[in-house]
Length: 159
Image 1 (cartoon, rainbow, N blue to C red):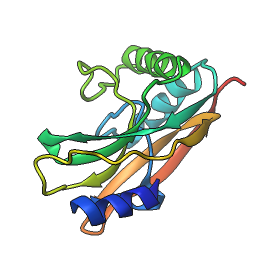
Image 2: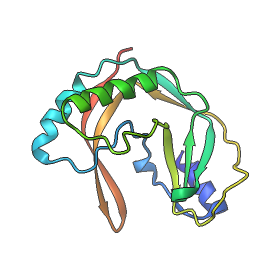
Image 3: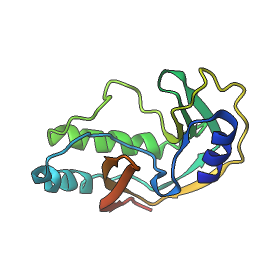
Image 4: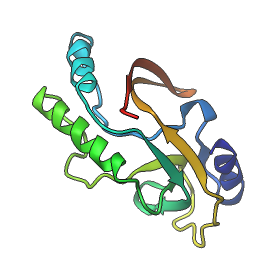
């Protein structure tokens, strides 16, 4: 997907996502106190959901935040089930999910700060198959060089 981001940046402008930071967010929590991380890991470890394969096969553009993304025309049923299970566990443990009121829209950010108000027509992309045997808890730290991610814990999904 990093290659698609670089190609799209050449066409539309903007800042491409670095290959080491490409991800799909299941639940964004914002700042979480270090002392609450064990509780967060415990909540995530109780998630029982099936593994799945994600087919990333389309591009989209969100004008309101000048963001180009890649997503799937049809999410596998296991993905929203995973998000619902994880969200319920986080709610029960007292974690606030940012943008909780929005419907989950699976996407991978490819470009930020796209200068255009519109990126139409968006090019077609060849489908990319992304096996999802588990999910991770990631800490994000921002700096002038961009975001850096650190995996804190990994959680397998059922086969």
